[in-house]
Image (cartoon, rainbow, N blue to C red; front, side, top):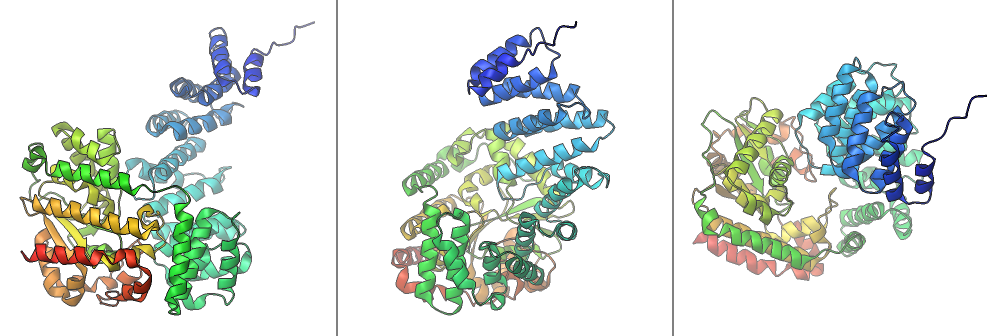
Length: 580
C-alpha cells in the first residue's frame, strides 16, 4: 500500500490561520530549501511574506513563479492575484509589468497576460491620482486590450478597463462607444453606468449626460446623489420634482458614504442658488465642507510653513542666480507654457483661448511635471525637491517632461500645462525651463475664493473647508507669487487678469500671446466654436464667448463670507505693486 502524500505546507497554514505571518513566512522559506519546486508552498509562503511586510522576498518569489508557471496551472490565478497585490502595496508596478510582458511574448500572446498588464497600468493610474499622465505603458496596454479575441473568457472585464483607459487618454469617441456597448449588454451594472455618467459629464456631453442621469434616477430609487449633482450643473431644469426631498433624506442618513453625502449637500446648494435663496445655498455648501473636513483635519499652520520654505528658497542667492539651470531649446523645439494660479481663477478660459491656436496644444491639468519631479528627486515635499535639484536631476526632469509633452502633441510648437498645483513648483519650473512662459492667473480674490467654496471639485480642496483657512491659503499663494515675480530676472511671468481679459479681450489677448511667443490670431477668441474639450469644473463656461457674467456673482454671498473680506485689502496692495 502506497504511503499517503505528506502535506509539507501544513505548518505554514497553521501559522497563517493563527495570524502569525512572520512564523509562517520563516517556516515556508525553510521548507522551500528542500521543496523548492512545490508551487503551492511557494504561493502560500509569498502570501505570508506580504502579510509579514517582507515585500522584497514576496515580490522576488512571485515574479519567479509567474515566469515559471503558465495559465494552465491550477495555481496560476492566485499567483497573478498576489503579484498584483504586491505591486499595489509597494508601488513596484514597472518591474511587474516587465515580467508579465516578457512572459506574454513567450506564451504566444496569451490574452490573460494582456489583461493583467492593463490592470496593473490602471491600478498605477488610480494610485497616482486624477491628473492625466502620458505613459507609453498606457498606450501599450490599450493596444493589447484592443487586440484581445472576442471569445476571451474575461472579455467584458478587459473591455471595462479599456474604457477607463480611453477616458484617461481623452479618447472620448472610443470610450463612449465602448461604454454604450457594455451598458447595453448589461444594463443592471450600476457601477459602470455611474462611471459612464461621470465620463460624459466631465467631457461636457450635456445631452448624453442628462439622459444618462435621468435613466439612473428612474431605474434606481437608491442611486445616490451623483446623477442629481450632474443635472444641477448641466441641466437644472431637467431635475425631477422630488429631487430636494430625495437628497435631504440621503444627506440625513449618516450611514451613507461620506463622498456621497458631500455631493448631496452641494447639489442642494446648487438648487437653492438657482432659485436665488443664497442663505440656504450657503448653508448647504457649509454643510458639505463640514462633511469633507471630518474626513481628516487640515493643518493650515503646516501649509504656511511649506509656503515659507519655498519662498525662502526662491529668495536664496543660489536659486536667484540660477546656476543649476540649463539653456532653453532652439526655436524649432517644443516650448511648454505653464498656467498657474488658484482654482476658479479663469485658467480654463486662458487655456481655451491660447489652445485654439494651430501651433498650440492645450494638454489641460496634466500631472506629468509633478510626477516626474517626485520620481527623479525621490521626495514629495516641494521644498525638499528644490533642495535636491542638481544639473543631472534637472536634465532628467527636462528630458522626460518634454518627451511626455511630445507624446501628447507630436506636432505642436507649444504645449500648455494647466496644472494649477504647479503654483508651488514655480521655483522648480524656473530651474528646469528658465525661459518658458509662466502665466499667473489673477481674479478678484473674493470672487476666486467664493467660487472655490461653492464648487464640488472631484479632488477636494481641503484648505477650502473653512473660510478662514481659505483666505489664509490665498494670501500664502499670493505672497509666493509676489516673491517669484520679484525675482523674475528673465520676465517669464505674465500676470493675466480675468477682469481685464473679459473687459478687453483683444488687447489683453494680444499681450498674452506676445508673451508666450505665439502669433496673434483673433479667431482664437472664438474658442467656444472649437471641438477641443475642457475637462474641468469650468467646462460649461468655456463653451460660451468671453463674457463678464461671473465678475460680480460673488456679491450674492457677501453677507455670509466675512472671513474672506480681508482679501479686499490684499487686492489693494497687489494693485499698488503692479502700478509701481
